[in-house]
Image 1 (cartoon, rainbow, N blue to C red):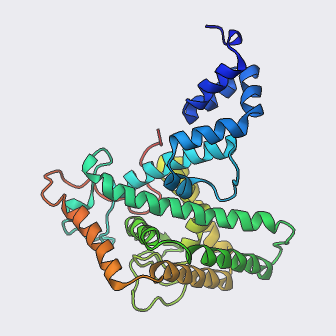
Image 2 (cartoon, one colour):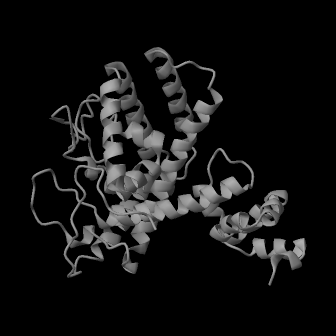
Image 3 (cartoon, rainbow, N blue to C red):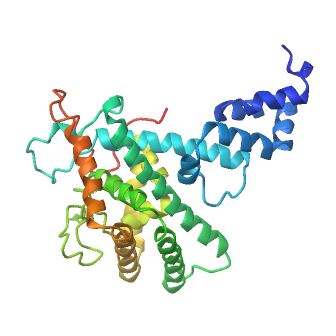
Length: 330
């Protein structure tokens, strides 16, 4: 049926029952549909958001800098959900926490195929961690947008901006529920080992450090993510890892970016970023929760993983020296 024979009211109803990719395609179909969607943008987007996403998903995935329903925020939310689910599947399937050079057998439970429905529960927990990383990256973007007038010509000005970003992040995480903070730490446990063995300037800073003594920014990367490198994750968010794991070209760009950050930042900058990361992770781990709550949460993860102890499938192996070419997000 020719779309021009349908009234605007009927077309709007069709749009409100469409998913996000369909809305995107409709905008490219004709000028009439493009103008119609833009004219009734708030109505269409609000309806699609309520129909396609529950309140928890909106809380976790809606960009912090998008306060109203719009085509832009709708597309970004859709893409975030898609990216985070892919990243969670990759991280759980390719998890490998052996030290560089170690070859002892891994527990089969630690590699869960992205297509295995029995891994849905643990992947869902890791997804929440990725979504929180995205919101922490949003905070940096918002603070920088609000301070565009501040020059970044010297280390002192850059550090003042970093300190402001850090302050806003601390204020944000202090109000997060325990479960959400814990799921961020769970996500880090799947993510961090990917960096062990990576070298800069022929010195290996990316292997497990001493949990009891975090030391300085040059020290080893521990399982909790304490390292200046984690500042990059907090700035770039999950897109850094999507780019790193989706193509060989993306891998190389991310490695070059890490190397550039290492070479271009002063000791003072790296030391500040290390301490800021350590303080933020401490705030995430040590909120107003009880030891009993923590034991319950870690107990859940252990039970979720040990469900796979008797799985005869061999582990697929880890992705050392991140970035690792996994394949494109589809």
